[in-house]
Length: 400
Image (tube, rainbow, N blue to C red):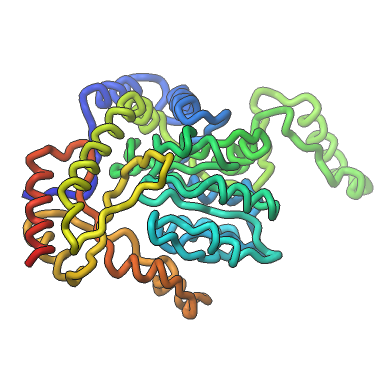
C-alpha cells in the first residue's frame, strides 16, 4: 500500500465532460475555455478570468501585465514552489525574499515592510497550504507604496479570508490546476482580476501578443518617414488601409506574447471539477480536523495553526517535528508506504539562485520551519481507513 500526499479526484461526470469536447468541433480555444473562465470568476467573485496552460504561465503573464521588467524588485516568500519567484526572473526583475510568520507559515507583512525599496514594484504573497495570508495588512502596505499585489493562490482556490474568497481581494490572483491542487485540468492555470486594463494585457500575453479586436489595433507608425521610397510608401498605405477597414482575416501582434493557451479538453474537465469543489474542500477540512484531534496532545508534533477569520483550502497539512529528527521520521513513514513530503526548500537555497546573487540570503524563520516541516497525505480520495493508518504510523514514529 502506498498513500500519496495528494492526488486528483476524477469521476464519470468529469470523464463524460471531456468526451463531449472530444466529439465536438473544438479541441482548443473554443467555448469550453470561456465557460470555465466564467465559472471560476463567478465562484471567487472576480470580474475577469484568463485561463492559461499551467500555474507558472499564470504567474508569468501576471508579472508581464503588471509591467515587471529590468531593475524592478518583487517581494515574495521563500517557502513556496520556485515558480513564485521564477516568474519575476522571466520578466527581467529581481525577486526579494521576506521571512515568514512562525504561526501561519505565510509571508510576514512586517518583513515585507523591511524589504521595500525605491525599486519595489509588486508583491507576490503566497497562500501557502491554502491558508490565506494577512491580506488586510498586505493590501494596506501595497497601497501606501503604490505597489501591485499578485496573489499566488495555487493552493487556495475556495479558501476564504474574512468573508471574501481568495481571488476577490488583490489586483490579480493566480491559480493552478495541477492534479494535486483543489481542482484539476491535468495541467492548467488561471488569473482573475477586477481590472479591465490588466485583463486586456493578460489576454494578449496569453496568445502571442496577437489581437483581432479592432478597438485595440494600432496605426502603422513609419508611413511618413518612408514616404520618399515609393515601394515602402505604397506598403504603408496598404497597412494603414488594413487598420481603417480590416477584413475578417486581419490581426495584429501588439506585444511579444507567448503561447500559453489552454485546451477546451482541459477546460471541460475543469468546469466539471468546479461542480465538486465545495465537496472537495469539505472533505479536506474533515481530514484536517481529524489530524488536529489526533496530534494535539503529542508533544513532539506541532500542528498547523489557522488564522482567525479564515477558512483554509487545506491543500497541504503540514506538521513540524519538534523533538524527533525530521529525516528519521520522513524515512520511517516512507518505509511504511506513506507518501509524506517536504514543502518547500527555501527558494533561495536552490543552486540556480545561489549562483545568481542569493548566496548570502537567509530568512531565519523560514529556515527553522523548513528544517522541521513534513506534509501528510490530504486529498478527497483519502479514506478514513487510510487516514487511521497514517495517524497510527505518525504517532508511532514520533513517540519512539
